[in-house]
Image 1: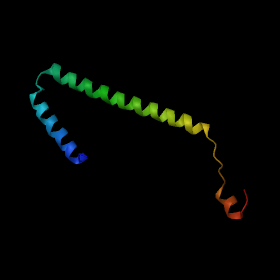
Image 2: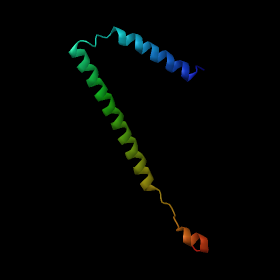
Image 3: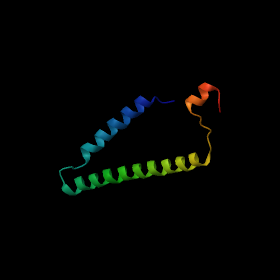
Image 4: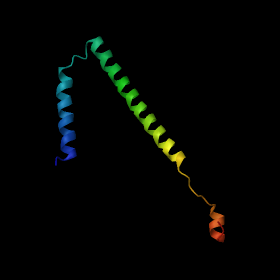
Length: 77
């Protein structure tokens, strides 16, 4: 097994080397990177909303019996 901290360190160092090769001075490249950033965030939000919708759909199907704290203390149901 590879230590996750080592894996993260290797990924960060690799991305630093790749970022040195990308010409961020070019406005087209910079706008492309910005667009990729926005698209990646939109994908993350879409996955989150889909997952939340699936969880809410399954949660609505099961029933739960709730009692007020006062009824529990008095021994009533």
